[in-house]
Image (tube, rainbow, N blue to C red):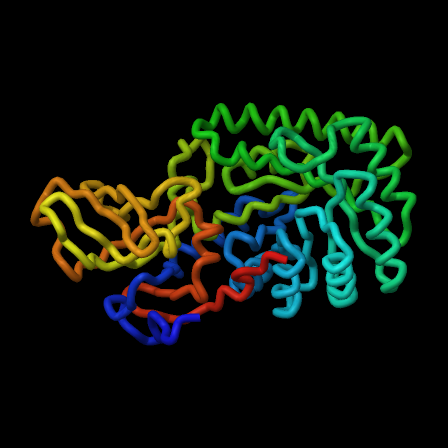
Length: 371
């Protein structure tokens, strides 16, 4: 925690200290409503991924607009949202080890919880612990539909795992986790459509194999901000996990929009100040690696195409400008982070602004929830 806050409710936008993680509430709320509208009247529900924002206030607003609950990536992350009143959480990850499993079962006594498996050896420890804690735990088989990360192979391998879960009370086979992460950032609409089309084929192959075992598949869950319309319209997926749509980031902004794609807006920014002006072509701002994640590339300067964020050090960001008069000491700039999820994890709170005024400070309560 820092010894003081970047802003207080009621402050003017100009008074927000830097670097600060700023949420444009008007754009954020439009994003929430656009997602809700995209699913209105369809038999596909929204379970947004909370790893994007790590903020219970945002999760509760998503649920108020129709989301069934949230996804989390870690047990400790889920604990933060359950404590804040979220009663339906899917941990889109495998949970291994006695300490984590014990924490998982304790949470399952307070909320409806789901978890993933992708290997037979993960099943028995969950079943034993659920029995000991007197809980029924939803378990999803994760299927590798193209991401080449976690996941059982489509078809027979995933079906055998589903059979094992279904035969291991008090576990409940709840369905399939079928998320294609790399497809979210394929740049052209055609590439994204092809990748999800291939993923859907793998899901169908797995459904056939599981149903041949006499097991019903209640839920097919997956999708992200970059592809959710394809999963929505697939006739296979009935739950979507898009999360970054609330903020957007530079990486998503680099995607070419396809016909009919939802026009989500950049709502998350880093306010930064020019702290050094060593040459006519170079300025240095106070937002570096500790203010913005660069795993998906460098941030961009919002609405200033003549400026280029060229390099990041721990506490410094180097801005290149062809115009010596374009920047002076003390000028403020707005950066769009390359990747919203890990950038949010760098901050204690979101400075929420409406127009030129700070309206609220929302804690990033699940920051650092890695266990």
